[in-house]
Image (cartoon, rainbow, N blue to C red; front, top):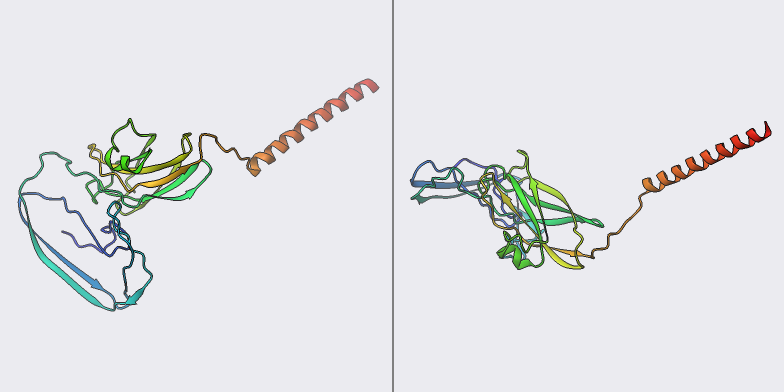
Length: 247
């Protein structure tokens, strides 16, 4: 396994646990894993305090930091055996999105944010993301693939820049549905059609079917200019008629 600087191996931010998937097996047999962590002179450690969640990855919130100084930790080697290899060209699904959240709410839209996953777990770039709006939280976990229960769905295509660990953003237009509490979920899909697990569920309160229409300053100003132009044309017509009568 290649060395890493910790940039793209953190499934859940600030939980103190780093994870990585290795899928580039060329043959069956035994493989060794060795981990080495080195800290600099001015590195700080964080005391982890807070709850953990089974559904969405652990979450620890703490501001209690203390200088750790220079250190080095080693683990391994650990050995595991690969007994079979898949005949499929792409047999690994994308990883699970664990940090889907709403960053801003507008009248009829919400801004969403999540961390990109890979094509094969945390390697490569996922081809697309499936975003769905469902009636309750359990449907995201148990019936995400069932189109009959979805209230709204979108396919969000990616670019080669959407690598694992990159923050992704999306604007969702809220559909016209009944007033109530709904849930958003997302999952990644690769080019072979392999789908990752559905993400954490995000609650969304919808006011109802009635759309809220607001006029911006630009629209109001444009309306005033249009009215002014109309009055100007009427004034020219009146002036022309008056001159015609006098002549």
